[in-house]
Length: 92
Figure: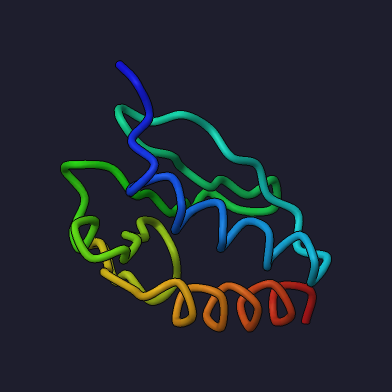
């Protein structure tokens, strides 16, 4: 399956912002989109045809503190803010 640029762009934008902030992450292919994973936790963010909000450029998080045993639909900016805060708090 080929990666759809419409689904790849939100994840690449988010990953670039996280790397610029010094937050470790990796990007993987997932179906026709991409996934961000973190070496410091089990949470991930995805954007592909079957994820919530993908049609409008939103991402879906799973296994993150704010997900409360479910998934959460977030804008790229919302995801960046939540992950940044989570990363900073993890060492405290």
